[in-house]
Image (cartoon, rainbow, N blue to C red; front, side, top):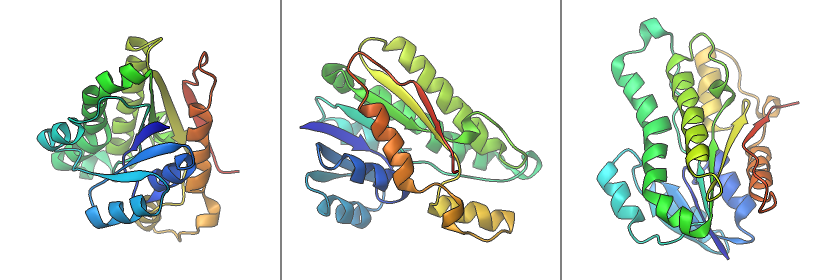
Length: 223
């Protein structure tokens, strides 16, 4: 059975990815809330908690120390700060870049030996904001543009050894989207957006590609 580590797996897209992989993967359920992570892990056929603050370099290094081989790494954790450039202070920029770019880069770096051993696959759950920066989305879009660049560089460096896919969902019915709608002063109707399960199915599509094929980039939008 293959092993997959999913960050941000206690809710939203990460939880949906865990459900999509549960039938044929042993799962490491990543998250900061130990109780929520344990609850998700207990609900799946083969899973265990991976509780760590991803922006704590020492804690992350300790958490991955025993992982000798890893088939799949899905980066789904992240934050979604909104605001104009004029009103976004340096700390907000740092938080966005730390959580959405530096933490995935560091976790990937630490797990590369295990991924290379397994000829594994890294999936970055990015965003439409990884292609287009809109007014009021500067810090978030910058972090997601950077995440796309990270994926492209990693793919080139690990060609033929580790597959790398960027998945770019449009607006998805998650807690983050609820906060976005509140910021915009609009009502939140989950029926207007992608379901987390639809995004998870896209992740699964990339992972199920034949061994001699790689899906580099996928975009998914609500109809």
